[in-house]
Amino acid sequence: MFRIASLTTAALLVAGSAAASPIETRIPYGDLDLSSRAGATAFDARVQRTARSLCNGRQPIERLSCMSKVRDEALSLLPERARTDYARGRVAFEA
Image (cartoon, rainbow, N blue to C red):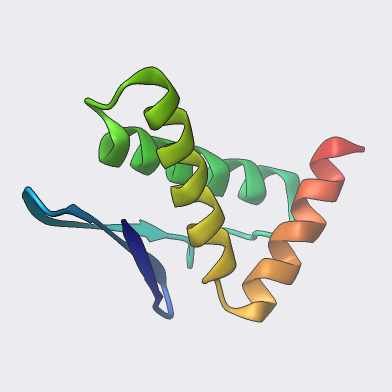
C-alpha cells in the first residue's frame, strides 16, 4: 500500500506491507520549473527512480502495477498549481 503526503518542496511516499515497516522517501520538485519540458522530464525521472526503488524485488507484473501506483499517487498529491504546471510541461514535451 502507498500513501503520499504533499509537502511544499517534496512529495513524501510511504510504501509498506504487513511484513515490512514503511519506507519513506522524498521526491523534491521545488527546484524544477514543472511547466517546462525539461522540468517535467526531470520530475518524471525522479518519480521513476523512486518507484523503482520502492517496487524493487516484486514479480514483474506486480512491479509494473506498483510503479504505476507510485506515479499516480505522486502526481495526484502535487499541489494544484504544480499539477497544472506539470501538465503544461508534459504537453510541451509531447508536442
